[in-house]
Structures are given as C-alpha cells and as structure tokens.
Amino acid sequence: MQALITRQWPFWLGGLFVGIAEIVYYIHSGHHDFIVVTTGFAQMYAASEQFLGLDWVGRVYQPGIHWTIIGAILGAVLVGIAERELRGWVHYNRRMLLLAFVGGFLFSFGTRIAAGCTTHHFVGGIPAMSIASWVVLLTGIPFAFLAFKLALWAELGGYFRHQETRDIARRHATEPLNANPGYRPDYRPWRDPLRLLLVGLLLLFLGVPLVLAIFGDRIQGSVAQIGWAEVSWLMLPGLLLGIGIAKCGFGTECSVMAPESALMSKERYCKDGVPLCTYRMFRGMLPLQGFMVAIVLFNLYILTAWLFGFGSIPNAAGDQGLYWGHILGGPLLAVGAVFMIGCEVRTYARLGLGYATALAALPGFFLGYIPYTLFQERIDHALLSEGLTDYLTIPEWASYTLGGSEVAWSIGYSLALILILVFSFEVGRRFLAVRLRDLLAKNTDDLVYGPEPEPVAALEPARA
Image (cartoon, rainbow, N blue to C red; front, side):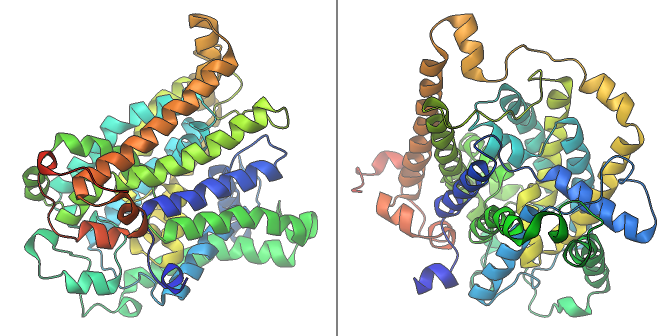
C-alpha cells in the first residue's frame, strides 16, 4: 500500500481509475452522459473575463465553473503531495514552452469544431461506439506523427518521455541514449520569471472562478446554486481522473501513437533524438494498455446498462452523428496534444503536478477559443450544420447496412475492444521479455529502464 501511494503506477492501473471515473460520471448523469470538460473550461475563462471586464469568450459561453476540472487538478496535487514530489523541477527551454503554447491554441480551437477534445471522443466516444469519435481518432493519427516529427526537427525530442521522478532522471542522466534535457540540478523554478508569470495566469484563470463559485452565486455551477452535495459528486470523477493520470502519465496522444512504433527501429528513434526509454515505452504498448483498460471498462458498463434497460448509449457527436467539423478537428486535436505533451485532461493533471508545459498551454487554450467565439455562426454553418451520416454508432450503421441486430453488433464491438486490450498486453510482454505478472506489477520506470530484451524470436513462452 505504501508503494502504491508513494510511487508511480503502471499505465494500466491509471487507465483503470480513468475508466472508473467515466462510470461514476455516467451513473450520476442518470446513465446518459460521459465526462465533458472542454465547454466547462470555456465557462471558467468567461468567469475570469467577467472579473476583468472583458467579453471575448463570454460572448458565447456563460461564466461558470466545472467542478470535474477542479477535481482533476486537485487529484494531481494530492498525488504530488503523496509522492513528495511535484514536477516544477522539470526545466523546459523557451522553444518547448512556445510549442506547448501553440499546441494549446490549436487544441482549444480543435475542440470547438470537433465537438469535444480527445478525451471526450477517445475515452468517452469510443466506448459509446461513436462513428464520429473513430473519425476524429483516425484523421488525427497521421497529423500526430507529423507534429512529433516537427518537434524532433526542432531538437525537442528529449522532452517527449514518460512521467519520470526526479530520482529516476538523476540516476539515468549520464546515459547517452536517455539524455534528459529537462533535468538540470541547478534549475530553481521559483527564480524563473516566465514560470512565475505563467503561475500568475493559472491563478487568474482558475482561482477567480473558484472564488466566485464558493463565495458568490453569479456564475453557473456555484455552490449557492447547486449545493455542496452536487459539487462533491461532480468533483469525484475529476479526482479519480487526476489521480489516475498523475500516477502514470496516462494520455490519449501517446496511447494512439504507440502501435505505430512497431514500424520504426530503435536506431531510427534514437537517431531522431527520442530517448530510448520512450521508444521502449511505445514499443511495449504501455500507454495503449492504460488507454484500452479505460475504454473496455467503460464500454462494458455502457453495454450492460443499455442491454438491461437502465441506461442509454451517450451521444458523442451531435444530432446527426458525423460532421465536417469532426474530420477537420481531428488533426488540430492531434497536433495540439503532441505539442502540449498531453491531451486536455492530461494537461489538467500536469497543471496539478506543476509541469511548465501545462502552464504554457493554459493561455493558448484561452486564445484558441476566441476565433470560434468571434465567428461562431459562420463556423457552425460551414462545419456543424449538415450531418454526413444518418447513424450515430457503428453497430447502428452495421445493422442497417450489413444486416443483423444492433445488439449483436454491439457485443461484437465490445469483443473487438477486448481483443485489442489483450493484444496490447501480449505485445508488451513479448517485447519487454517479462512475465505477465511483472507487466502488471511493475511501473513504467522499472519496465523501460530494465535490461535490453532479447530478440522476440528467441524468447520462450513466458509464464503468467
């Protein structure tokens, strides 16, 4: 128990917490909806604008607070306290911080035209069998790799790594293939003027809505309007999200990029400036394991609720299912998530842990909403007014076009997700040359800094 509290977790365990968080939110919504965070963040920006006498984001979004976001940040803070280490020690150069700012802008605007962030579509929409969410995923993957290549071209590849502790970074700092530009023993974050400025913006964007929500009733979701019991219910899934993500670095962007690592050699990865530990993390499918645990768990709960008549399948897309916005928004979300080193909900956890890239992405988020709020009617008319399909879910489409019942296709869909989950563990076990119980018990540090595995063909079948 002490190790679980004070040490980082494997990805699958963090994914378990993310899946449970989605289920808790789904239950509280009356078995209709999954976690939505992007619009809530816009409302919090609108509350800060109201305090400053501005009306940029607030012209479209009502000032409010999203307690699930507050819970996610708080959950990550609690993880840092329990582990006795926040991540302010990680030093990022100005180019990396600028890239994170640009990523925040692109990602934020992408959420407006894609009707949600990557967490919304991947951890909510894919379990809900949404056609639009799969389109967002598939259109985004090539652009995620393009963004990764741009980061490598800018010589920033060393920053793309799993969530190391300071002790791990110090112990491996002298290894040429695991060079960590973020580890600088002489760096003092409280003496960094840019970091202090970004912390000030964090207090403005999040502190103002929080104070207004607790001590007033002028913004949507304030305690005076909904009461502490509802606040607690809304914060609970956020706490689970924040803890699960902060304990392992769970993120949608690295999860969907992991399978493609099988197409690249270790030498090519390292030549491009990617740390060996990152290659081994990707090639061992560790992020995909956490991703699929969350997806399968939530999907099975949705399926059970729907089949037994006490819940419905959430709509991840809109009334007409698929829009041009999903097709064009997917690439923006993918590029933004890579540039930020984390999707939106992972950025909330990284804010709680004190990562400077998350702080730099925050003003980018704010500015990314403004092009949409300025031209909302034109954008909605062009990208979100005409549906491209009459179906919301893959089983619904398959039943009408290929035959068979929607229930049978839904069960088949769940089985396919389970097969991907099993595949991710089997590939990881074989590549890392460990037993299944070691893959389940060891955290990412133990696995990616372990001894170099033998060639897969030479391995004997491992015992579970």
